[in-house]
Image (cartoon, rainbow, N blue to C red):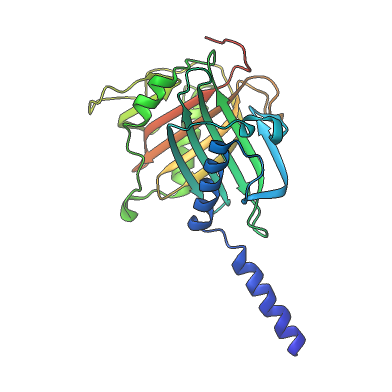
Amino acid sequence: MRSYMFTAIAGLLASASAECTKDSLTAVTADILAAQTAGKTAFTSLGSTVAYTENRKKSDITKGIFSQALTINHNRSQHDTTQCATFSEFIVTNSAKPYVIATTSRVDNTTGKINAIDIIWTTKGDWLFNVTGTLYWASREDWGPIDVAKRDTREVIKAAADAYCDLFNDKSVKVPWGTPCARLEGGSYTGKGQPTDSCNVGVPSGVKLVNRQYVIDEEYGTVDVMMDFGGTAGNVGAGGLPDSHDFRVESGKLRYVHTLSSCGGKSCM
């Protein structure tokens, strides 16, 4: 009986230590920010085995963008306690090596350590890239916490993002456009600070946005979707552009959209 009780208590303690909370994930994003700032490819939150991709391709973290010490001029993070995942947006205005970076991490519930990192990064030559414009507009938006009584469910937040993404291949989809709504695409911005601002300003036709990976934060009404823009479903990184769309949803309606599309080091403008 005593042995059974000790085993049960040990199991409970293990579960408690592995609990995924907003605080534990906030510590992870703080660690990621510090590591990217210092150019460190080994840091406290990182697990011993990590699946690592940059722009939808398997990469070596010791040779990737994490190995660059970057002065980050703007950062914002989201935390998904249901999936034990995080998202961070970094803007680097260094004129020699400017970047806009979307970083997601997945955390192992048993160890509390990161076991997967996926990064989309853009720089000069990428789609509509203008880091000055990106920083200007992003720093003026309100992505703060939403009052508890007004928060949408994760299902509503995800559905709004999916409707937007589905529209690219199916013009019959009804998107929950908010008014006002502003879309930041590279350095291009649809908003003018007016109550009539709209994100419904047209998107391409016949383009599939596939292989979607989500990080949802109900407290902030946000969902980041990493995907292949114009790729092949079921084959991550095969064709199309590595892409991140980050959405802010308020009362079930789209409020902000931030997009990154990497052209693989070649100009696509």
